[in-house]
Length: 105
Image (cartoon, rainbow, N blue to C red; front, side, top):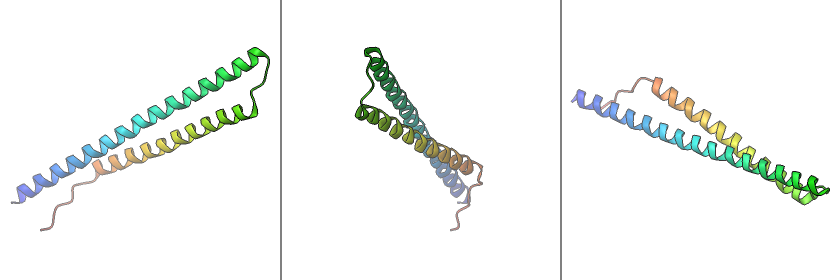
């Protein structure tokens, strides 16, 4: 019976480890997408400035504020996701390094 309990414990531990790795992978994918979003906003902002300068006008205050707001929000999302990825990686490493707890029963 002790062998079955040990096997069950190890399988449960492997399942949790795989689940954590999948969660971390999803976060990393979200982070990649958020970084792409920042790049797209920066590109749009750059094109808007270029077109305005090319025509000899300045960006309107509203347009500038909209671009800045988009960039700020996108960068905040990247920062949030970077924090979550770092926490998930630390938890996964801590979990993998911890010895399995035997069941008391």
